[in-house]
Image (tube, rainbow, N blue to C red; front, side, top):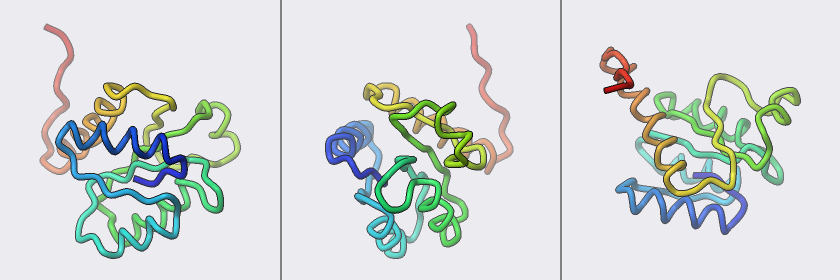
Length: 130
């Protein structure tokens, strides 16, 4: 996870660890790249879109070069309509709006990872309903 705001980073870390996920934290791009270089595998990169220095999309592009199988979930305090026209979001990575509640974060992470698993196995998406 790459998040410059300590409160948000701590909340997300506690939430995801309580849900059983292994979480590695970085407070910005340089720390995230250093951490990624030490990790053998990254399943999901959770990154803030707007941070001092370089934002989440720039960090994600760089990390995906060495971890092409990683999935990306962006988070932002700005609405998608405010950041997309400025070119801050690229690709089709989902966006989670801050401040999210713990259930929203866990659901978003699960959805991204489940979609990744379906792609890897070729399994169809689960149908909603009864």
